[in-house]
Amino acid sequence: MDIKELFKMALASIFANKMRSFLTMLGIVIGIFSVITLVTMGESLKTYMTEKIAAMGVGANYLEIHAGREGGLMTMIGGEITYQDAKAIEQRAAHVISVDPRIIRPGKFTYGRNSYNCSAVMGLSPAFLEQINWEVAQGRFLSDIDVDMHRRVCVLGRNIANKLFGSFSPIGERVKLDGANLTVIGVMAEFGSMMGVTYDDFAVIPATTAEDLFDVSKLMEIGVLASSQNTVPQAVAEITEILEQRHGKVDFRIDTSEESMAMLDTILNVLTGIVVGIAAISLLVGGIGIANIMLVSVTERTREIGVRKAIGAKTRDIVAQFLVEAVIISLIGGLIGIMSAIIISSLLMTAIGFPIQFSITSIALATSVSIIVGVVSGVYPAMKAGKMDPVEALRYE
Image (cartoon, rainbow, N blue to C red; front, side, top):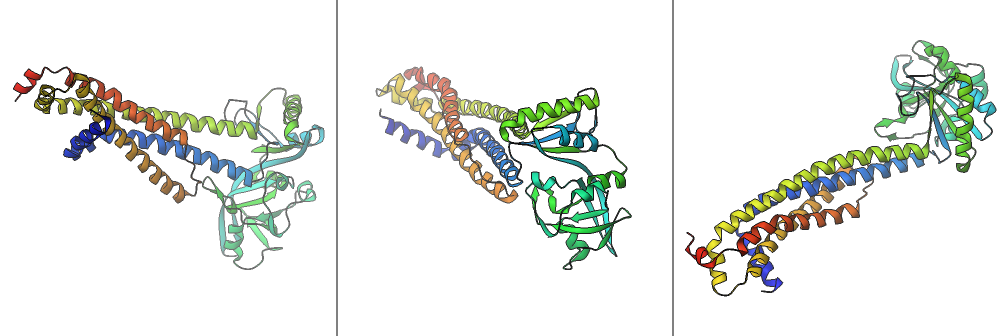
């Protein structure tokens, strides 16, 4: 019997019991769908993060210093970094060209009867604009004098300025931040959002002013630019030496752009691995389902097998018939899963604004797995059918 005839017989059997065939392949559909969808979402998220970080101007020579030891708890737990630490790095680190001390707290801005609850009032320095690709639309940004003199000035995000002043220019106007008077010196250009965080809701004040208004001495982080990508290791070594001398211990950590992206990749890969594991269980269940239905099919078609063997069909013909049928069921399920995953993933990524990044490897792997599942789950039923005695098969009622 040629392969074309085998496919015709297999498809005829499958479409003769459409609902049963669909339910049989449902486990394969769900497993393949889960694998491709989650891998696609992970790859799309990585692409999105890379593009956003590049748009922010954060290059390979960018570093961040946080309180807390490497691998330990997060910022401001287990240690502290201060404005004086930032100044020491700026003055002593030869391979550092820019240092930005940062304090971030929420606050409420008011102007007359208008108010705005700001999710992030950022105490910064002029170096911020050297490190992050963000521009001032009106007025000016902070100056070194603003920071050194603890001036009570602020630069508003676009959304804050619109809420408090509408279409009027806020430059030179006085606003209140949690009751303290500040003079507006600038409005930031529209920046947009990243990972659900809207940067146009932020406001900027001098880091020293933030220390005074919020009564804090700890920094959230220190942003640093090394002189080049090649000098990042030297900059890290210098910063480590300076802070260790000042603190007497290593109660801080230095995160490079490369390490941050590697950490993101690791987290996403772990999550993807967990989901792929769950999907593998679904594929296993789907394979068991195919084997079970094929066994039922063998029993139901006992007389058919007996007739075919009686008129000359060999054992290998019967085995091939049922094996091809199992593979086709699994392959159709895999194709449905792949197409569903591509469509749903595209809709999801478009809805949340992520770039669509399909993994050809995961699609090829999913197709291969669906075929393998079909072969493995069809072998035993096919062998059972092939070993039937034709006389006993013809007697079956």
